Each structure stands twice: as structure tokens, then as C-alpha cells.
Length: 126
Image (cartoon, rainbow, N blue to C red):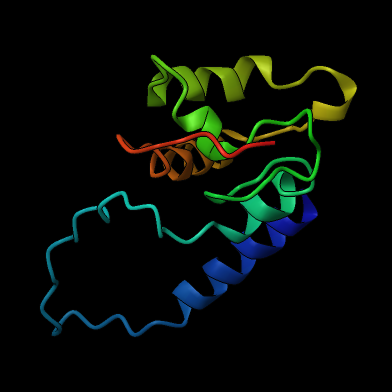
């Protein structure tokens, strides 16, 4: 949790250092990046989840009982909403999974995991 707070603090500090001039023309907001398999894993996702789960495609989870993120993302019927609900409500058991996630973290994790969905997905052998 401290790592997340540190990363957020650094981001806020960096944002505060940017020039803000009313004479500069404001660019329209960019659309969110397209979901691709090569989307970079957010640092805190690796820090929080990577000890147990494979957080990238074609890797094996360090904990054989923890499914890889690609396996989860490609589960039949999974939607972003069902994933957010799971991460919000049901992820705090058993004790090994007792991870306190704030809403913003849940949103980032779910968005990243959804980039791993693929029509050509094949489960990585254990």
C-alpha cells in the first residue's frame, strides 16, 4: 500500500511541475489507448499481484494455485464489470489473498486485465 501511495505522490508532484499557461491552446483529450496484448503492466500491479499471479501473457504464475491474469481475463462470460465486482467484493479470502485494494487500483487492474482478452487465447500449460 505504501508503494501505491508513493507512486501516486510522485505522479502528483510531476503533474504539478508542468507549465500551465492560459495563452497555450488546450489540446482535446486523447482517447484511451487501444487494448493490446503488449500493453505495459502498471508497476503497482506487478508489485501487488505479481508475487502470486502471472500478470503478463504466456507466463506461469509463481504460485501454482493462482491463475494468471490472461487466464482470468479470458474466462467465459467475464466482463469488466464482473471483474471489478470480484476485485471489490470477493478478493479478500483466503488469507493469502487478503489484499486491500482501493477503488482506483481496482479500476486500473481491471482495465489492464481486459487488455489481455483475445479471440486467439490458449491457456498456458501449468
